[in-house]
Image (tube, rainbow, N blue to C red):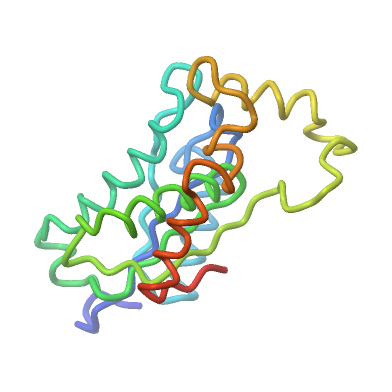
Length: 185
């Protein structure tokens, strides 16, 4: 959409993949191209978040950065104020970015501290929807375990809430997302 149209545009907060350890949205031609195409096709403002990477900054640092991105938008910067539809914001992530979007969305739904921004939902895509990750030729289970080892808080195991959304109150927080009528895809 042309900014001269004066139509407020929905906002998509996008979180790239990379196993919590590699890649950046801006430096990757794949992610940059994806965000550009998404903005064009959806006629939306797409904000790609450069989150801190593990192992130097373990989880929840990446989720903290996603929340900070929503705070940046809500600060009513002139550009956002003139062009963004604050009532129509979505969080979206691919692979570990989907995990980050999930946790940032849960925290936003729980704490309600991003007004006037209204998150309407999220598109969360993770590779781990498949039950056959142990046979994955690109990222076999041993590599996957190593990525989690370096990304999770020190001493945490795969049963941690950042890795397993059914522990740590995640299901109760998901109920909050339903209550405020989020769409999760």
